[in-house]
Image (cartoon, rainbow, N blue to C red; front, side):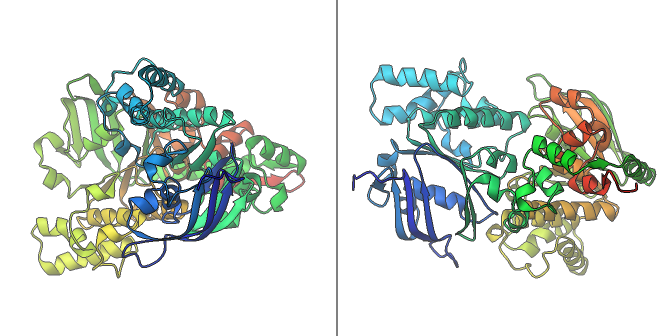
Length: 570
């Protein structure tokens, strides 16, 4: 087939089932994309977004086992006829786990790999390497090993490697999911530059709702089926639909979700205009009530549980933590923020003995961590890794949660009691016999939390607990963590998600180059926008806007609580 179709992408009644899967991953998908369009794809975890990307470049059906019906046509070519290598000039895909695409010894070799396989002349290859490394902001780093790049730099290198092939279609599968705020900003900047090139057709799978707005069209899918396809400005106003699909609505849209859909704002500028048109104002009295609520909560904290005193740490190539001081009281909920390399993970590993200070002391419940075993500290401090798969080691949920208590040589009756309590806390009762690796990412994260809870620690440390979760899973995880804090657990959480930190944490600690730049109540820290910008951070959308209105509000719920009509009594 070589006759060009009217649309550069044409998906006709496509269904796909993975081998041994109980249900189809894609069901009767009909979808077209015109040349030069940017189309965003969004939906809950497991909706079929990544599967659809694999179908576009021919990895489905050529390299993935399953059953395909229907037809995928790329620039006039049937992907069932052309193999992925033959589709390279037409479509390039940057996968969700982009690091798996980087395998050479230098940035320039990575970018040259595709053009070399297309047998392009050496001078053309050299020019493309130069041009596309500069395009993604990696000029001058040609000889650098990919492994030594930051997360954002690796993502940009993966994009450059695809661009060097110069395909007509570029597909990016969740390009910002695992990146810190600076890395996200860098990659979004590249996407903006690509969108400016009108001859590029772009497919963008994305969880970040604010990034969906700039697309020409938005495809919403769930359970392998198309739920809606159309203009982002229309679909993003449908707050109930977005919630159903596990997509977080834009904060300013959610703040006025009671309005008619056509009137709901999508940007801060639109929200400001609507706010003024309706005669709204924010109640100073209700804002002060929120501040008093914060202070009352602080009075309920217990004794100091953690004390880091003049802590220095390095891995031999320069300081990671630099004379750092931090104290934590029982019952606090702390979010630790900062860009990659600021020392966040190194800091929290000081709390359970995985790392110990090179200089200074780390004291937990009165114990110097340098004099305690990791085993003994694990009974006080429970640590949940960013990737739950690094923590899950047993073949059933029950055995995984029971591992810690068994290691502590508790009797089976006590072990069962702890497992039952831990699974009930994370709402996984009934999944005891399940293989953890067959569960969703959100469920596996809950298994990891349950395994920690079974040790009955006073303190829970979580490293990026929401990464890769859709909004429903994310809300579920954060409500679980909040309930654990309400039950008396001290929570220390590393996160790149500003709205999560603002909405859930009581206190925020911002690190910059191994030092504490900001430390205080969340409301006070997020009010210091200039300081946050030093770390390439910014307040959540609703917080930034509310500050323009004279108040610092941390969530949509707080905004709605303080919102009054000018003619209403306060």
